[in-house]
Image (cartoon, rainbow, N blue to C red; front, side, top):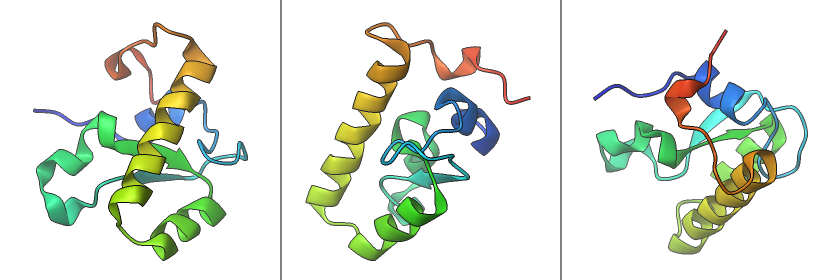
Length: 94
């Protein structure tokens, strides 16, 4: 199984933080890597700015935080691509 690169994830989200809309510089795993290899799946990754990334870590890994991040992620994808988003492998990381 191949996982998308961080550059590819950032490009998919148009280099915009999914939380606040500022320029993104970090790819964050919603469920941490300590929970297994699936943490690097595209469905578990989001683009964040430095401030939102810091805040995400300060919030911890509660079930509610994870659900909120997934909700925000899906809404950002719909905002950017509508109801039919492209697959991650169709996005260039160049």
